[in-house]
Image 1 (cartoon, rainbow, N blue to C red):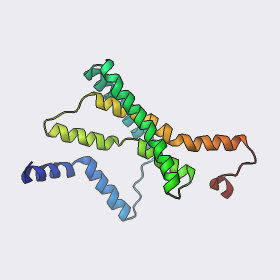
Image 2: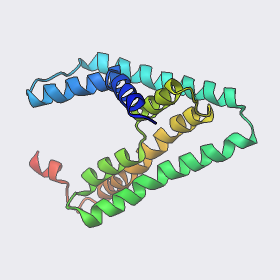
Image 3: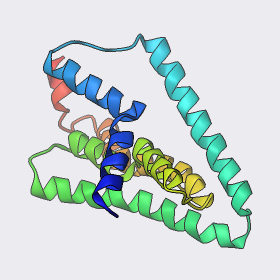
Image 4: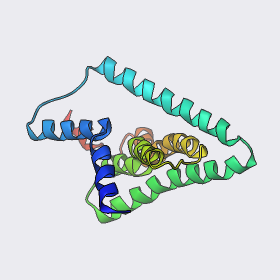
Length: 177
């Protein structure tokens, strides 16, 4: 890849809406400007994104042929997306001073894929004339839920145990109330 093609690729990537919105958010944070959306709008956008990812994943699975060859990539993606948060939770509890709730929340982020990064990489491939297998969109969609559930499971388990034992120590938030 020569220098001109690298500059062209960088310019097209840096001018994409995803990157421009990231820069806008970064500058707003530096200027201490609150750019929050009203709750109904945020929920509508989140629902739209979940539906779009699911539909795109289903279309990608149908395009690549939903057969026996599709099962293994889906299973590997689901297993890894459930395993990473559990490993991250353990590592965060040992290596950092984070409490169970914070470690669980961070661990859920480690398992959850970045759909924006995935879509950006897919677009870069398309711009280069290459394409990714259609099954990858389905794997990305299937990986989201197990990662979040596995990341939040350790803290939820502790909370359920605390409710069963009335003499158990309360969380910091419950003590403040």
